[in-house]
Length: 408
Image (cartoon, rainbow, N blue to C red; front, side):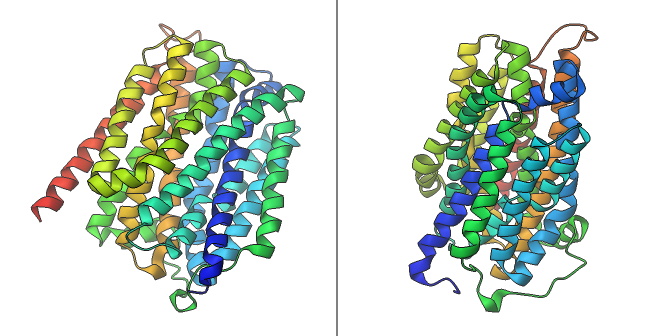
């Protein structure tokens, strides 16, 4: 490999650092985003929820369109430049949002981040370069754990510094991302073997082209479909949690930050101490089913509760669902050649974007309606009913695939 054995640990550490910074930045702004939208547009929490859905939709649309191209560029020019550009774009996004004189700036910033700043595709491709089949799920689990640790720290920081001003968290998040990108320029080496670099195949450098290619690989496309369905369910948290918590429990910025920190702690414990053992004992398929089953129970309970204390307890238990994404990602990565890891992760980015688009528009619209005066009754838990139904569908499909695999 181009990365010397002595530098492999350094490379992995930087990848995890970058994902951590991404997560911290994302978490920092979550407690204050509802207040920023209300401040810019002078609207109710119900109307702010709807606007947040459309802002998130712009992020998702641009990530969907650009994901495969960004992945293909990584396969052609290497992971290093694409990874650093993504991190830099993420930082610029938050600075734009912090400077926003009107809500249109939030749309512009999120579009930029969606197109270039979705860091998980380049991060997972680089981790795939540095892993083999025996430890790939655990490697992806480390990426998830880095995100989880950031999610512990980010919301707590955001809830605290948000009291100093609605825009301060955006400047802090943007500055951290840009500083990390500059640091990576000096210490992060290329992780891809030179022999594995390939020309860009333009007909595959778009979501439709990559989909057509993957359809020929039936096993991958079925897992990718479940990956998409699962994301549609779990994205209820980034799409709606801040607004749900504010509407259902009347939580302020600090309390929203604490609740997200609880989720982050739970995810980290799962992805550092649990996933490796689950995969070793049960394999990726059953590990994913275990995580989805816990999520189904959690979503069902969350749809009915009115107690803030119970919500925190359920949030603490929901981290076990963090085993699902690394397991599904490892299944697909094992079925893909080293030359096409970037393309696969780019496609996964597009699937993530479509799922986020669905989540932003569906969950936020449902929450907005059932917390508005037009609703026949107030029911802030309605989005979690939909999340539970979607999760049940993913479990059923994964069980069918596992049954067919054993039969073969």
